[in-house]
Length: 206
Image (tube, rainbow, N blue to C red; front, side, top):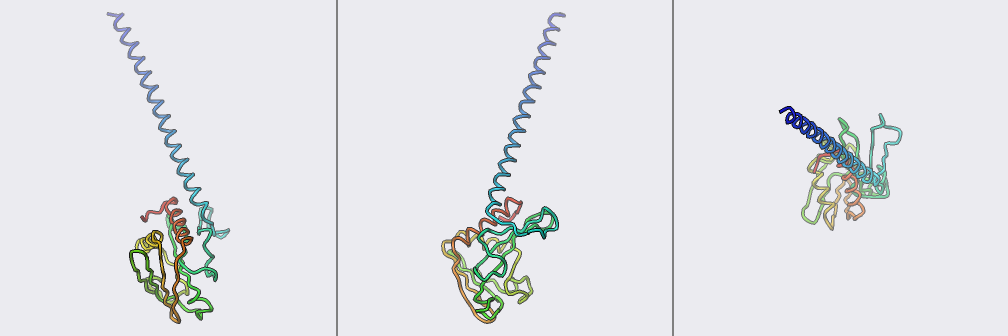
């Protein structure tokens, strides 16, 4: 009887040791999977943000501030390019926000008598969108010659349609004259690059 009890105790100890070893191995595998996942996510984030430039300079309130634009996008009030240009800034609670700058120098520049953009019509492959000055200027028409608007879900959906369309025309109406442009593929890619940055920094609009 004592011999049998001794055998059972030894067998139990071996089983417990084996179980502990298996659990340790499982824990180590889970740690490695988690670490690989973190490393992969960081690489993706670095690759996406490498396509952008951070224009915050030394003016940020702290080291976490950012103001990303695509590397091909002009600075604000540029006379070189017309179209739709996205910026990515740090909002409340460190959450990213998208801002859209709308430029049409034939209306807002010297050629247009430094007028204001009153409305615009966006024509994509699938839809026609009309945006008036109350929407563009967040209820403060004429406050700026070029709107810089925080992107809401409505505007986000329009931007995604623009990116996915083969042909996009924008008709600008100003308080002094009108103009229209075609959105080039390079501008569509620039919009997509900033939206990708928005998502890797935690943006939740889809």
